[in-house]
Length: 466
Image 1 (tube, rainbow, N blue to C red):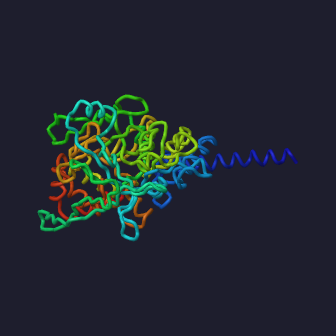
Image 2 (image 1 turned 120 degrees about the vertical axis):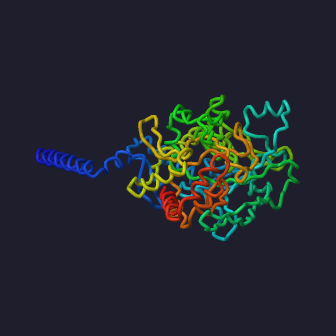
Image 3 (image 1 turned 60 degrees about the vertical axis):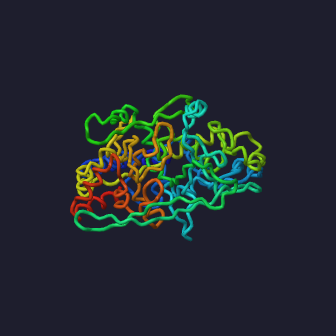
């Protein structure tokens, strides 16, 4: 009986191997193998759960780490002290109690909630300009900006127990008409940032207020895997080739390595790695301390914040849990659009109007994987229309890191609504986003506007697929 079972198992393995080999031949013949070969990391699947799926071939230990990271990303944190010691430490000041609140299904945040109020994914940021004083310059060696004295660098819309929230944000929009050379008229929205119900007194008279919407987490691990030399190869800080584009790196201080490194993450490339970005979001968005940022964000006048009950442990999010969150973000599948004929036609138009000079469509990672994030990860001056006046390390008040475009098409699948675009969600669609481009992108915007309507629509359809 045992011999028969062994023979049947052997036959099954032989048949399976034959079927697999035949399947591979078919995949090579149809050109689909490239999708599946990258499939452990890259997918063309478009559904609500695309960005929730892990890459293939994780070991048992890696899968456990992925699940641990997912749990701390998704399950709500609570105020300390609590019986739930693994998840207490929220606040005292915070905007959301889960990462998922701002990144639904790991996608881009919404501008508004269903009831029309501003979403928690929209974060008010504060800073004051440097006067060049010695102590300020010393502070800025290891900090991105000078925070507002009473409220800090970010406004919290929630507080725990007896700790008051800081303010309630609002955006008021002004409509501006833009006319194309062919006579078409479109309307763009100019934002006015408002902070209501200030709980800790008036803002500093020189305060710079800007709002930021949470970006998609699509492909962050692959972006981290882009070699630095590939990023540096695209620098043209002084526009030596005279094309009007002068991208440069934001060199930022890393609290992890204690030295200046290339910034890759956040709207102004102020964070160096996913671990750095995750710790930054933990402390600023949820009030969770880590070994990277071990102190609560309470200003001198926020007495109740400083006296709020602490968790039993010194650090709210210890290293092994923070590293699990980092692993979870890195080891999810990345969405990249199917490269068919329609894609190639749209890409050609994209390149024709020079969008691809900044939104670079191809990089090769350290592991040899070719990816299409549509970013150069460099800072570019985008003109006065998009300028917010906020400097972050080397980034000026009008400079922004080129945002990656891949994965934006998933927003509608996840949220049943189209994404609001640009750093503050002012643009209701891709055309409005393009019309806000100025500075180094002014020529590209004008080239787009001079396309005939049919080509403009083809280019916009291409962007909607990314």
